[in-house]
Amino acid sequence: MIDDYGYPDRFLEALGQWQAGWAEDGSRRVVATEALRAAIAAAPNLPPEASEVPVVSYRKRFLMAHNPQNGGDMLPLFYDGEIPEGVASWSTSYNYCKFSFKTDRRLATNMAIFKHAPRPEEVVLNVAALWTRPDFVTAVEAYADRAAPGHAGLIHFRDTQYEVILDAPLTLDDLQAFCDAVPSLEHLSREAGIETPEDEDDLWDRMVRADYIPTKDFWLEGAAAQRVLNNTITAIEKRLDELGIQRR
Image 1 (cartoon, rainbow, N blue to C red):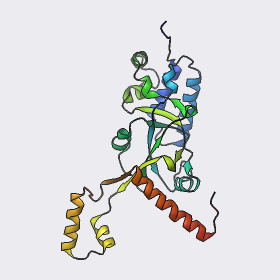
Image 2 (image 1 turned 90 degrees about the horizontal axis):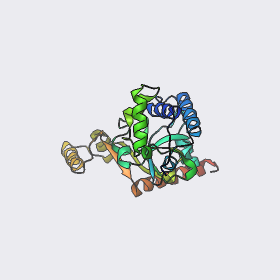
Image 3 (image 1 turned 180 degrees about the vertical axis):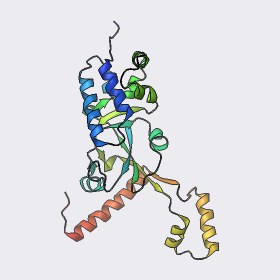
Image 4 (image 1 turned 45 degrees about the vertical axis):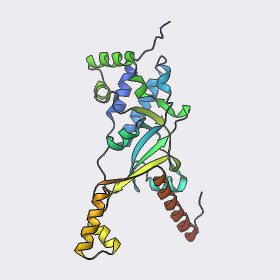
């Protein structure tokens, strides 16, 4: 017996609109999320792998102390231990997140990658799994041939992002890596108390050998990232104690 799976126009339109994005406009994100959830609920014949993510997933996020979309990231992350992210795009590829997704640095942000093993109830849609199915590819191509609503987002991204859509928080325990720009040579020299041109040249030579070039992205990953986080949390807790603020 051949399974009869189907991809209704409403589902393809909602997925295409989701993948087209919302230019970081929170209200548009809410609309796209509600439309996608409703379209999935109205598509009972999606294949089972569409609602399963059997591998860990990654999300790159620009953390902002004063994020206009949620009031700020740092306090909930370090005080509560998590950011309630809601429905969002993740990827099953760490390298895609690190090297290809939103690579331009932003002022007043810290770039971070979170690693998460999704629970079944957190999975909204496994887009990457759908793109491995010839019947889904055929349905998308036929939909695009009609220039139907949302087709541009579907065709533009296809399976290049290894995308899965999850409703999962970003937690301190799941923080896999974070990144900042290497400080300028002048700043490092000042911090190290270097005053002579000869010592500054020596510092520069050592930085080049270590591939630690000013303004270049510098990543801390895995255990190194968690060590820095633990030190940061310890310092925050100490300061809270000094101020007489009770931790949650």
